Length: 159
Image 1 (cartoon, rainbow, N blue to C red):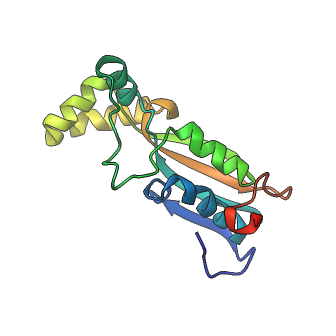
Image 2 (image 1 turned 120 degrees about the vertical axis):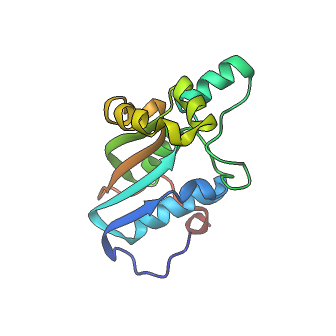
């Protein structure tokens, strides 16, 4: 949330599976900090689990509970991908592209849980065909720093 780099130091930032490990109130600070260290026109690549992946939606509909991407103590900031995208836009980013990784079709999800080694060939096929971001367990966001600046400030700058 507070990197020791000068403002606009980098053309690119890579942030893989990090943001969900932060509390909700730390997430906007972290995303804003990524924005701060990027040069205008710079790119950030984030991978983030999607709490609203398809298997989670089905589990919630049928059993009234979420099929989480991890335990709440490991992912205290777990949320649906749309909320992460909104946080990135609030920090000033434009979304250049969004890709889905690991679609979560319910039957395949159950098979993966029960016998992971048995479903590897099936995973290869459906991962190459059904990568609709909204149903995927993981999303990859390619963000661009706009020159307009953020629409909200992180808590430390607002005071």
